[in-house]
Image 1: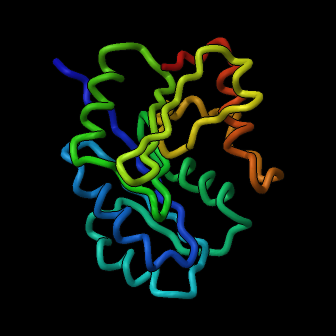
Image 2: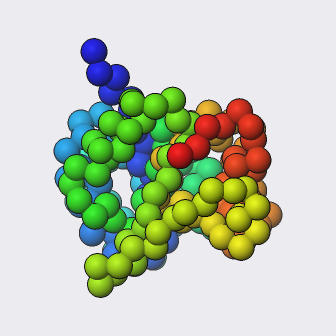
Length: 185
């Protein structure tokens, strides 16, 4: 029997009416059928909430309230999620194909991985290829959080540190890489 882990996709947004719908459609059109979709809005003043309400029947949980920024919003999404694995697909981000989450689940099922990461699409047919083989490379490289699927347990006692306005995801990822109990690929 093939395991079908619950995958939580979290979108954080603030005044993202021009780019949010593309993100939502890329998530709700995934072929994988065990998805939980969460949208955390920072109390947008534009038409963002109208877009969220348009797809409300496809969103498992959403909230619109003031926060201190992207990392607090991401933490709210983590706390609201029930998934076995978490991915952040923020407003403006999108999956490059409809079966991508299914492909990722196949990898997660074939190996015991706590954190899986890959390449990110940067436009015009180009990808930012991730090739981190040694932890020391994190001094000058990082991985976009959009291409990470992490077990929810990777966030136990290690959520995004909101004291870091710009680098909380880098700090979190570095701590994961330094944790010998977290298997990455």
